[in-house]
Length: 95
Image 1 (spheres, rainbow, N blue to C red):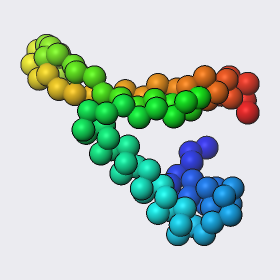
Image 2 (cartoon, rainbow, N blue to C red):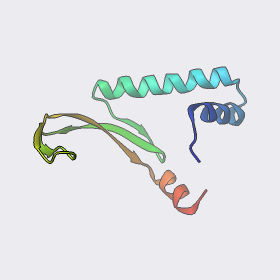
Image 3 (cartoon, rainbow, N blue to C red):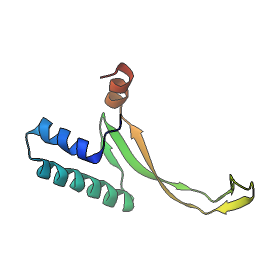
Image 4 (cartoon, helix red, strand yellow):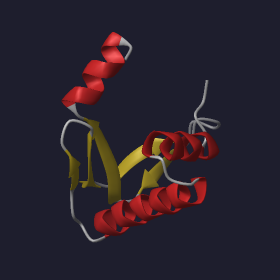
């Protein structure tokens, strides 16, 4: 099963006792805050849950999977998300 944005908003609303509109606003604010922080080069830590940060990736040579032709992939920044201990444990034990 895939949890969609609508499903997530409904669950947040139910768990916190707020309206779905308020839950959607809170989720949007969370996404914007994390996005802006990462774009500014900051790390976002939610102890036990996850850590969001960025890393520099150097330029490298790749291959076009269709033709096998080599191609240059430019250097850039990527997003890294690391699961925290509580999240890992919950997933491992199923709840």
